[in-house]
Amino acid sequence: MKKSQLAINSVSTGGKSLEERLAAYSAAGFTNVEYALTHLKDYVKEHDLSAARCLHDQYKLRCIGGFETHLCVFSDTAECEKNHALLLANAKLLGELGAANMVVGTDGWDKDLSQITDPLGDIAAAFARVAKQMRGTGVNLLIEFNWSPIV
Image (cartoon, rainbow, N blue to C red; front, side):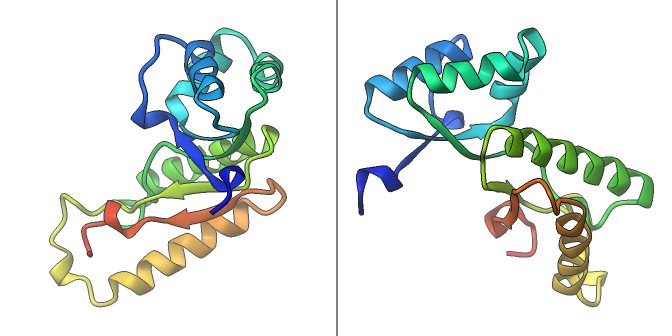
């Protein structure tokens, strides 16, 4: 494995601000960052996306992806529509920073999935709908099934 293939995930690090986190990643020798999107969104809310880009440039870091929430599959339609809109907004944010990937799990932890005939089929259908909406963002949708109750 090459050093350029390694990434630090902001969920696994401390820091009071995005700038503090990025300075530490750079000092540790990382060039790639995957975000717990709250870290990035909090900064962008207070500053703007351009300032976030400048920080990445300053520390010679590249945003490769991020995550914030699950892919809504097993909840009611209104909740899933709201969730899918959030995922699309997250993909647009990540795409603006040049990231290629967004990771999600699935919902259903509070449901009796034994009563659902084809949970993988339902996940695939929801995944396809959201991935189609994300076309044009430059961001791929990825599922980590360890975030899903079906595993």
